[in-house]
Length: 327
Image 1 (cartoon, rainbow, N blue to C red):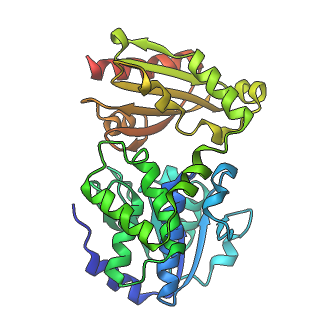
Image 2: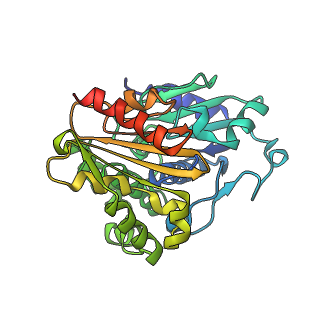
């Protein structure tokens, strides 16, 4: 469904003091989208704060050199937000993905708008500006800049390039089209430097993450004659390797590098008996529908959810669900 940008513009014109928020365990699309939107709104003379439910992961801090992204309960408290007159959520439509910022939204009696590209949505009591065909939330923020008639500058372009590049797998996923490359070109013209962004993302590995990658690869197993590959991370693996939880980002994609693999899964223990699962697909398997069975969501080719219980039981439930949909 196409976004009604005229309605969006009218909403922006009616308000002056914004809170921008994205999802917990933020990735570059989440962080880049709120930073890009902040610059757009500030060009219009708006008073803007970015407040997320969790601090920015250290490995992604390059995207916010001015430290504009705050964390609730760490950098700012609920009482510090009482002068805001509208709340904008980007890159998620789910309460569970908002973390403690969900409680903030519920506590504040101000309008809520959502700018998102994911399938499915919770009843957030919001006005939604969604396009599930968009390759990244960053793409929608770029569209918002055009709708609002603001200048594309380097401060906006750098985080938005990171947002779009990462959510398209550096322009290799099926969601990438001619328009994606046109968007990338405009962002580069505006000041984004792809080599710098790539280097900050993929050429700053820690020894801990490399060791964790080795653990993940050693545990890879396949089902359905190689069509499904899966692996896992347990809590003790972080201490054993020196890795941190944010080092798990994108490791599921290692399974898709195996010849003949159509789908992949990684199960990551976040606390005792509490797991995050990530699904990937390059076939008919709809990861978003699969994730919904476990209270999650996402895209057709990539989605995630949470699950609790004994490790073996959780792994078996997830694999059984994937296998049933792949057969």
